[in-house]
Image (tube, rainbow, N blue to C red):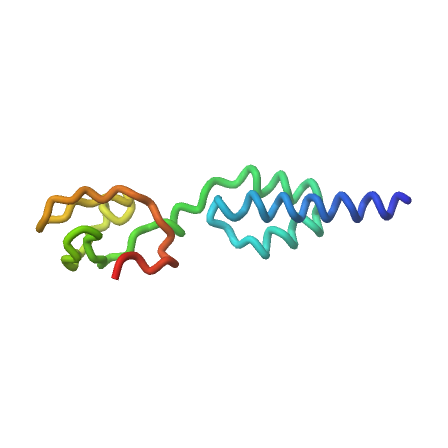
Length: 104
């Protein structure tokens, strides 16, 4: 009975750890395992971690979504996730994961 409850608690903590890890830009599979193995401690650990901003940096080169001009972004534009196209003055300020490949 107690083993069944502990297993159920481990499954719930694993699921919630994965659900919390995804929007924070963390590795979901790793945190599912951590939630299962460490239970509530794993869940508290991922809940306390800040968002991984490095997963959301813009690439150093990308095309303007409006006029398709190739732009080279400086470091402050990449970190801020915002830039203005020098060709059409389109203001781009949306965050998106680098894994999407940006606009091509």
